Length: 255
Image (cartoon, rainbow, N blue to C red; front, side, top):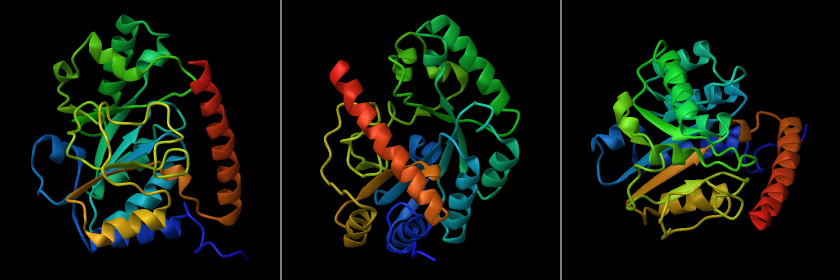
């Protein structure tokens, strides 16, 4: 059987990343960060569950085993909104949040979008307490879902913060979007007006940076479906990511 241990973006590499974090920094949820209930030196862990929620359960278990607490943002789509999985992750002391995309769903109409947001949020709150939210990028949509808050205020819904808009510029942000920890393959996955002080391309590079303890903090985003459980899955998702990255480059030129 082909070896998974030497490949990036596998569940084995995710465990190695978590081991580096657990041995070096405290971890906090997004809600704790928004409430200023965190030490100066910490890792803010966030996971956007765009698809394949079973993978989120796997990453949550690894984190729980290592004493890491993090935040999982679930979309409201039928294939992702899995109350059984969300409850299991919540019961591991992780935070559950809403991964909203209603401005795209409403074709840019903020009034329709906010009603969808209200409806989805009410459904989420039948499962667990939702205190923070995070936009879903929807790269094929021309609408940036964060723009909904140019018209409305998420605090009116009992939300304490939005994962991009409420993040401070003191955070060192890294995202696995596009199968790399830099921002070259991202259209919307960034903190507005933030210039990064540290960089890493591979997970091994990020692990080295964490273990060096040079930075006071890290804000890490992963997409659990990207961290493959088998070699076959790894090959399939690698091909998908390459195709998506090419599409994003074309969209960037068009826009």
